[in-house]
Amino acid sequence: MSGLELAVLIDDPHAHAAPSAEALANWNAERELSARHQIATAEAEKVSEKAAKLSTSEEAIRKRKEREAKRAAAARAKALAEGLAVDDNVPPSLTSASTTPSTEERPATPSKAAALQTFNVTIPASSLQLEWYAPDVAKYTTLDAARQAGVWTYPATPYERAKCRIFRDLWDKGNFMGGGIKFGGDFLVYPGDPLRYHSHFVATVIESPKAPLTPMEIVAHGRLGTATKKSHLFCEWDKDTQQVTYFSVEWAGFG
Image 1 (spheres, rainbow, N blue to C red):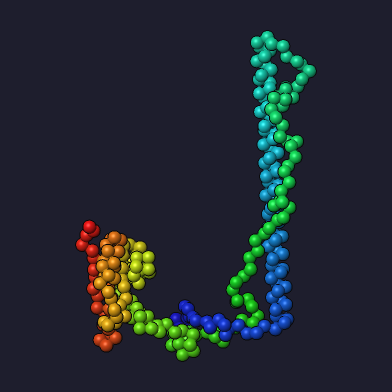
Image 2: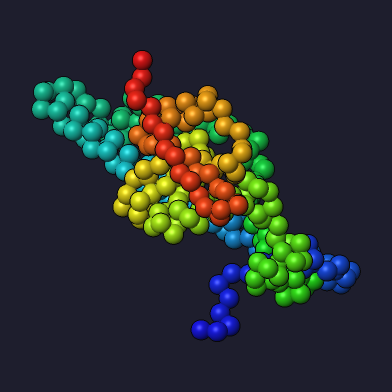
C-alpha cells in the first residue's frame, strides 16, 4: 500500500498565505450568508415549536372545558335526584365556570427576553476551505523532515529522551501504557489490553542514574501507589549502557 499517508505534520503558520482583498471579501460574504441561513433556519424552528405548543394548549383548554361540562352535568343530575331546586335558565357549563377562576383573560406579563431573540451561529474553524490556505507547501510526512525544518522538536531534553526510551522498552516487553498524571507518575502500566486488565504499576521516569531522588519522594510514591492498589515503578534510563533499570516500591502498611 505505497503512497498511503495515515498522518502528516502541517506547519500551519507557513501554510497560510497573505489573502488578497478579493479573497477576504468572498470569505466574509460566505460567512454572512451562512449566518443568515442558520438564523433563518432557527427562526423557522422556533415558529414551528410555538405553533405546536399553541395547538397543544388549545387542545388542553378544550379537554378541560369538556371535563367541566361533565362535572356540571353530573352535579345537576345529582341535585335533581336529591330533589333539590335547579335553575334551568343557567347552562351547566356556566354553573361550573362560575365556581372556577378564569385564567384565560388574564393579560400576559410582558417580558424583555421575549422581545429580544438570540440564536447560536456556528462558524467553521477549519482552514481547509480558505482560498489562501495551502497545506501541501508546509507538509511533512516524516519526523526527520519535520525536525530538520524545526517544526518537530520532541524529544529535546534529557527527561523527554529518557521518557521515550522507557516507553519503548515497556512496550517491547508487552505492556500497554496510559497517562499516569492522576496517580502521580508519568505512565500507567498495564500487563495487557487496558480494556481487559487493570494497571499494575504507576511508572515514574528517572532521566539518568545521576538524577536526584530524595527519600521523601520514594516514601510518597510508595504510599500513593499502595493507596491506589498499584506498585510504583521507578524507571531509570542510562544513556551510556542504553538500558532501562526498574525498581518498584510499595508501602508495607499504614500506621
